[in-house]
Structures are given as C-alpha cells and as structure tokens.
Length: 247
Image 1 (cartoon, rainbow, N blue to C red):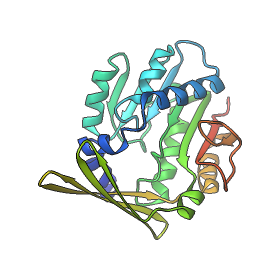
Image 2 (cartoon, helix red, strand yellow):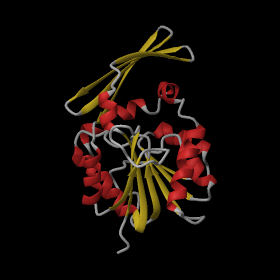
Image 3 (spheres, rainbow, N blue to C red):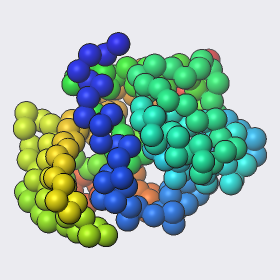
C-alpha cells in the first residue's frame, strides 16, 4: 500500500461535481488528442494501447474506434464503472498507476490531462515511469500530457466562482511548497461540499529525467494538441513523447 497518497483523488474524481466542473472537456477534444497521438505513433490496427488514469473512458472510446485493443486503468471505482458502460469493448480495470498492469504487453501507453503528480513524493511519480517502461513492449511508445507548470504558476488565478447546471463552485488556488493546491467549495441547493486537489508543480526537466531514469528514450516535447514544439513561455501543455528501446 502507499499510505496517505491514496487520498484526495479517491474522494473527488468519481463524483457528479467533478463531472460538472470539468465537463467542458468534450468528446471532440478527446477525439483530437487520440487522432493526433495515433497519427504520430502509426500503430497498425489491432495494436495494444493502455490509457493510464483513464477516468470515464473519454479517450479509451476513441482508441477503440480506431481499432486499438485498449486497456484503461483508473483508481476510481465509480469512474471505471461508468467507463465500462460507455466502452464495453475495452478492458477497464481499477488499479494504481504506480504498479505495472502487465509486462512487455503494450505497443503504446498514454497518460493524459495532467494525471501525474497526485502523490506525496516525486519518488511515487518515478514509480509511474518505471511501471510504464515495464508494461511497454520493446519499441513501444509513451505519451505524457501535463500542464505547462511555468505558465500555470505565472498566470495563476487565485480565486473564481463558476456555476454549472445550478451548482455553484467557489475555487481557490495557491502554490504551497511546490504543490498546486485547488480548494473547491460546492454549493448545491442547501448542501455544501468541500474538495481539494493537490498536484505537484513538476517542471518539464523533472519529468524528462524521470523518463530517462526509467530507461525510456525521449523523442520530442510538444504543446498539445497543436503539437508545436514545446515552448516554456507560450505552450499551454507539456507533452512528452518517448519510447522503450528495442532491446
């Protein structure tokens, strides 16, 4: 077990309020990401793909539609239950991304929408990269999509109010000890719920070093989903493309 690191995301990700707050990330967005990834990977139909931290299966569905044999992994039982309804053709599992799903099993692995950095230490993040390297076939490809931490911290909005379908969200953000903390107060009628997100403010060079330490070869870093070369000042996302050596 991994102690307190199994914390905030277990209680938040499977909720209706999470879906309401982030529901603007729509199906067209997922289709654009998956299409761009597969165009770069050039995998033949029937290749095996793993989506780490797959949530409710937005991206999994499009990998399946492109003919990939697709596995999705997520820590949230509620999210996986929803994903199984949405994408019955996929192999959807509840699990911890720090543990290898299988060994030498996948042609491609993706980790999208800032799904790294949830843990208490960077040693846990490093375990994710080791698990990815173990699960990839020799020559297999990996793509990680993370926020551009520099621009997020630079342009951090400390407080905002949002409303979705009559539910009010009061969001407060701050950087604390290299962790981006988002406190979310939800007002739903007379009920008030409080949630918190904590994501390590990982820098691009830290993630690149983790990939190399796990034995992966970095191919490129880009923005996403434009796929322009990564620019620390201008890019909205940090997308790392890597592969497992053939031997």
